Length: 320
Image 1 (spheres, rainbow, N blue to C red):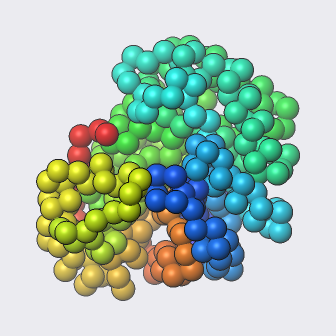
Image 2: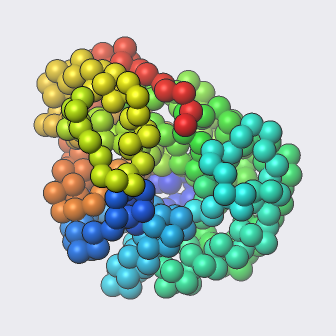
């Protein structure tokens, strides 16, 4: 497992991080704690030293599972997220910062996460959505700065709305964040347009999320795939989207599988091929996924000729 620096923080994070949304259960069809504990253990054995979770993942269940793991492995870095007080996802253009992330709300949310995680500090605390208009009121930043000064957090981050990398350009240039979490995969290559260059210039770390497009880029979905009751992918691939997505995956399959040992490894290697990316954080729910995902770091970036071919498969859905 290779590591990269998270922006200019000095924090060396594994190229493959542990995305902990799914282990919270909730929108992924319910928790499977035995598998989750085994997945965390195996990922750690394979070199994963960075876990990304959030307060809302299973209403704190993900944080508590991660906290249980961290008791035995306190050297592992952890990132979590503050949910918007309004409860609205995604943040709408022009949204008011104080309705979503007032300073006192950020502090209270951080304290709850610290309790769930069972530790004294959080390495990276992130706002769980973002609108460019938030930058016009620094109350959110004052809350974050207060926590940092108190030693409750080390670094400040933001998780961007899906398919909306341009919303963070002013934020990156402001110098107020250490890292961004951004939707990035073979389909949605839009962060490459402007955001990644800005992050490299200002040394802001990038966590690449949804590298598998919620499962489609593993190559395992079919046009007749069904999802468990309560699984959010029922909506994500709703209507004709599942059929369209599977057809697009099959069109690129020969390119990816010719260059990589598997579709999942190829999808992760695509993300790791960009120098702005510090870590890719696929969701991991079991030992098999941990082993498959971690192997992508050993394989290294995709060849330049393959990346050129994959540019033609860019497909950005409307924000959801």
